[in-house]
Structures are given as structure tokens and as C-alpha cells.
Length: 326
Image 1 (tube, rainbow, N blue to C red):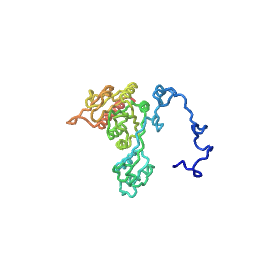
Image 2 (cartoon, rainbow, N blue to C red):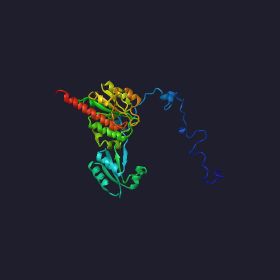
Image 3 (cartoon, rainbow, N blue to C red):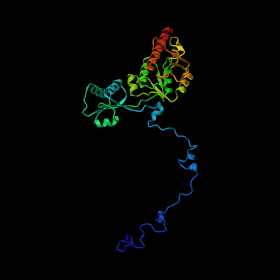
Image 4 (cartoon, one colour):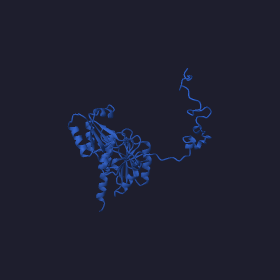
């Protein structure tokens, strides 16, 4: 039987100190030591009693500037020859252009490579399998563009910039606009008609993605966009700072033709594509304006309505400026 053999070397000689010795708990210098009494619950890390009453630590951000500047939109990858070319033409901030090895270099890819090189982006040839893995099976047509995260401004900074502009502040706020193309179109109209900034809610709203940037035709680089956690509270703060809150809705009580607040410090609030202004936002507005229409059309697209209203505000402000003595 194993262990009972009397062969030479099969049994350890008595008196050797190798291995454990009966009754010692192992070698005495290495013997087990007790941990002592269990500490109270409030002194035990991870226990609910220890967490209760402990000071809350501020949320950590991967990018320290994100908290200072109002956060950022996650980076994304644009796929396809037409979308990539449109992004590069619009000047969407990007880091690298990936082109599949052996891809057919048509006019779109050739122009994309040229625009990316002119913008100082990295142009990399990668195996098609890498693009397949990157796109998750989506159609990429042999080209992909890495787009940088959009950096949002703080609402306080947008207001401060408007107040320091020397003219009556004009801000645009979006209430539940979920289509990024509408967001981009509003950004373009706001920049064209002299708005000082744009406010978008953090939830249930489109963000400044590559689609929104492309629709804005690059004007997003000239107009600060702030993302706010609570639109109603932000509007109330702006009202306390002396700005008039004017909603734009098909059921507004004030007619577009009788809009006399255009020359005042103003926040123009545009409702969503379907339901218009939400109840709480509508209650926050000093006035709700509707655009008169002729014909069977009941309402306008959110971005079109915003463009019409901003054009009227700009016209009335120009008219006031001409009538004022120099």
C-alpha cells in the first residue's frame, strides 16, 4: 500500500523538520493568527451602515474638461461613401479615415482621401475584415470615418456670451426634437439669423451627432450648443436673468403677425415634431406664438418653423435698428 513501503527513501526519517508537525498548526512562525473581534458595522467597508452618512464623492469623468464644458457627445464611426464624403465636406471634426485595402477608388473615395489629407487626418489602409468587424456587419462600402465627440458648452457660458454681445440676447431652445437632421437644420438657421446659442435637453432629444453636424453644414462650429439636464429649470433661470421665454406652437394664442417681443432679450422655444411643446415647458413660456398658414397644411416641420420664426425676429430687429437715431 502506498505510504507504508519500507523501501529506502520511501519514508521520511523521524526528526526531520520538513512539512507540518502535528499540533503546531503548521510551523510556529507561520501559524494561524486570529483577526480579533469583528469591528462595528459602521467601520466595515462596503457595509450599508458604513455607507450611510459617508460624504458623497463627486462623479468622476474620464475627461476632466467634460464636466467644466457641459459634457460631450460620444464619438462615432460614419460608414459609407456618401455619408463619409458629406461629413468631410461639412468639416465634421474627425480623427482618422479608414479605407479598405484594394477598394475601388471611385470619385467619392478619392475626394474623401484628399479632403482628409488636407484636414490633417490620418488616412489608413486596413484589411476589409477590420472594417467588417468595426461596422458590426453594416454596409460600409470600404470606407469609415472616426468622428470626434461633440463638446457641449455650459448654459451659463452661452448666456454670458449673449449678454456680452452688445445686442439683445437671442437663444433657441429645443423641447423634445428627436431627429438629428432637424437639430442640424435649426443650428444652421440659428447661426444664419444671429442667435447666440442653442439649448437642448439631455433626455428625449437629439444630440449633436455626425448627422446633425452634417445637416448644419458646419455652422455648429460657430454656434455654442449647451446640453441641459432640466429644460424647465433652465428656462426659469433665463427668465430670472431678464429674458422673455416665447414658445413656438401651432396652437399658440399670439399670432405671428402680432409678435412684438422680437426686439427684447429672447429665448425661442421650439417644440417636437409631433406633440409640440410639452405641458411644463408651455407653462413656463411668457407667450406662445403660432405661424399663420394658408391651405391644407396644419403644421410645419420643427426646423422649418424655427427658421421662419428666426427670420422674422431678425427682420424686426433690423427694422428697429434702422428707426433708432444714430
